[in-house]
Image (cartoon, rainbow, N blue to C red):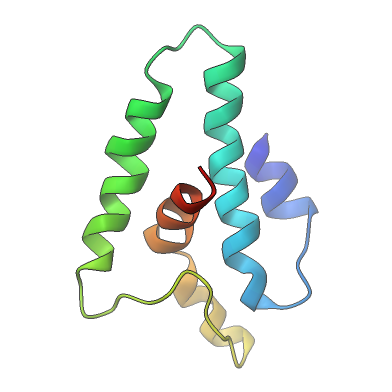
Length: 93
């Protein structure tokens, strides 16, 4: 639901804002699970899945800042990665 709302229905002005909408959706999905469900290990899973994959991606030569300048739409698709989702969600945590 978080990704449906923030990832699809809330549209940023340009692709530079991709990180915020996807990071916020990632964080809110975990927050909703932690607050409104019987799952007690939500934040452990967030760390083990989202944060760890972001840490690994951040060590590669292809790493990039969470927010990047996007000169055209074709280059926007390279930013759908664990840095945008996992690292961005961790920053908001």
